[in-house]
Amino acid sequence: MRGAFPLALAGLALGGCGYIGPPLPPALDIPVPIRDLRGVQRGDRILVAFTPPVDTTDRLVLAKPPEIELRVGENPKENFELQRWAGEAKRIPVPKVTAGGVELAFPAEEFAGREVVLVVRAIGPTKRPSDWSNLLVLQVQPAPQPPRELTVRSSAGGPYLQWKSAGAQWRIWRLDEGAKEAQILGVSGEASWLDQTGVLGKSYTYMVQQLVGSGEHPAESEMSAEIHLKHEDKFAPAIPAGLQAITGLKTVELSWDRNTEADLKGYQVYRGEGDAALAKLGGVVEKPTLSDGQVKGGQKYRYAVAAVDESGNESAASAAVEVIAP
Image 1: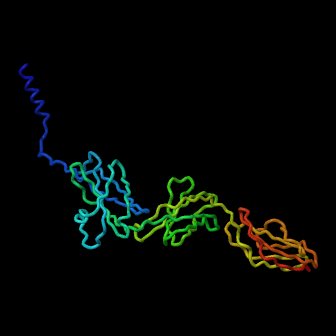
Image 2 (image 1 turned 45 degrees about the vertical axis):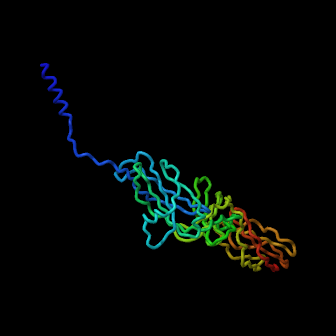
Image 3 (image 1 turned 30 degrees about the vertical axis):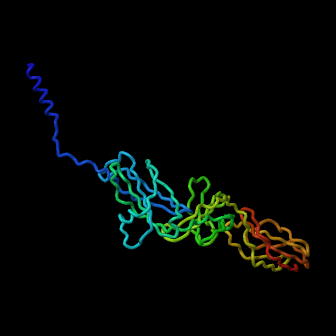
């Protein structure tokens, strides 16, 4: 029996062997191309961002973050051949890449007044580069300056901003109370902006940027100084118009045009007897009419009316009308 043991062991070893196919070629370790190159000129700098690849064209994970090659040069517009152009374009140093996105900035001054192209590619551990990324085209401008003397006040239509600035176009930003990031409200062609989305009782922080150039990527200034506002109703309704006074039997009948403010509460009527000063006649009335039955025959009376909103803001009084009670 001792002679059978080695044979059995040999058979077990042979049974564990699998089929050996042809050897696989070594992985090339070429990173996949970067597809999200984006950027903008802000002030005197060009800001660039992109996501470095983590995989290779062989669908393997890169063992370490790739080296990055970023190129920028003037756009020839005609006969643009990418490889030849990239060989002559300026290389921008890129800090060592770590996991996640890459953001960097470099001076814009040497490219001012020119349209430039930016491209980027990743270089793998075997020094083989990926294909070039999408092209980013920027029209570089002399550094736009941020708006100055930004002001904001509450108005009936919403917070109203004004500023001083060179240029002809501005982007408006707003940070809502409790929010972490500011949002773009819009672009203005005048040095002012009415924020029609402002809500009474809410607090806001505003900033403005100057924009220069057109297209998808205009040059932009740094942000203006921040300005804060608690949007409160401190503005009165319009002065009522069309006040009329008609005498009746021991009464004076008053009527006027209806105000159109959404937050209108009513109207305050004022009366003056003879040449006495005008004084409130009762409380606020909701309708644009009033019958004054407390009059004396033969006495002169003067009337005026003001509009009052829900916050208690009162307009100036209308022009007075005068009657003599019969």
